[in-house]
Length: 249
Image 1 (cartoon, helix red, strand yellow):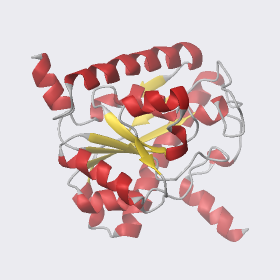
Image 2 (cartoon, helix red, strand yellow; image 1 turned 180 degrees about the vertical axis):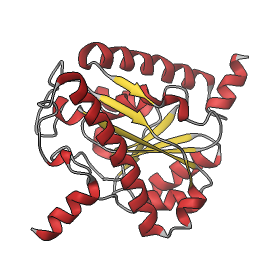
Image 3 (cartoon, helix red, strand yellow; image 1 turned 30 degrees about the vertical axis):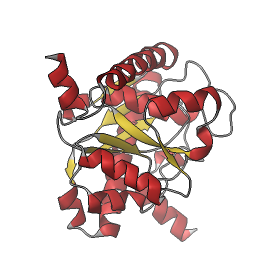
Image 4 (cartoon, one colour; image 1 turned 90 degrees about the vertical axis):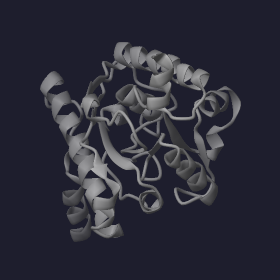
């Protein structure tokens, strides 16, 4: 029975690699819950089989652990900046199958590695913004994710989070403990249906889906802790509204 679970969750991946993922995911989930009050919503929406592209906003260094806690059942290989593959951290993320990116989200070798995962029926995680947010709001998605859409038959699963920027902004060298985080998994989207919209429209659709999830997480945080958290700022505007405001300024 357990063998069949390995085949369903990550076809062709070594059983010990899946067990290592499970161990790291549980450590991350418990730590995030205790230290940051993490709450996960929508996990039941994740397809139990088939190749998946998890598409998430990117707020902090904690995001891969937050995404792992949200996904749990479907081990993914995340895209990660090549400079992170150094020292103890590099050893850990390499053991979890992270895909090094040297030249941006469209790096050819990283895309080949991701497509091989998807062709095998497994999962990858990508942050289409290309880097962590500077202000908590969503940034424009880069085109790298469209390569995965065009060359695989994977289902896209949007994921949104909020509170992680306040927990560990890119300007800070360490996290702020006891800053709560929320994350939500959205409804799966067929990649063929996305591509029928055209590349630009497909990216806009993904931006809209992910940002709607992020804003729902933001609303939940304020319902729990009041209007002062997260603090008012650019992250309060939906992605389209923020673009319009930028264009007018």
